[in-house]
Image (cartoon, rainbow, N blue to C red):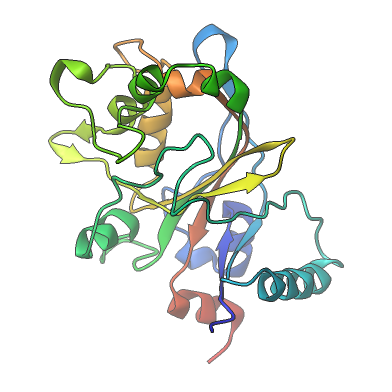
Length: 257
């Protein structure tokens, strides 16, 4: 059984201190976004992010404790969320999460900065904590829940034709720009318990503009003025942009072989 893995990502300030010559041109701090009817996506930008994966919570906790101890003298922990697998990759709303993730080599095209650009082989990442109002969502009939999401609940089949609302989550996040699908690769996880709970949204992209265009469409800031109905049931309380360097770039920055 694998003990898991740790991925480290950096905000612009931290990475520019380690490897100023390798800072991707499009890496920036997340800026607060204000949307329809007074809604907002707050910026909680910080400097270093660790994503710990393991199929055992004891191994993940061991890694978290080691990292926390190592950085205690130089930084302050601002966020800690413990994610988990929920009913075979479902969100706490009961809908399957990540259904539209690109497959095979297409996920690399979507997630990795291409050759020829600074940061090639690395990735831009967006991390957000979304807190759900599950009681409010569960009060909807299942057919209406499906219209909010844009997929069937039982088998995750995308609604088609006139059955797909323009303000569904699928419609607002399935975007093309100049004929190019703005795909990202999601690795989100549910978190929390009976009280506070939601989804820690973690996604990777070859260009951070892909995150921006999706969020703007979700919050009514696109030309059509529509917003994503899912934002009526889930609220973002954190948001940061990150750069995930390639293993080679990280080794160079740390001066390790």
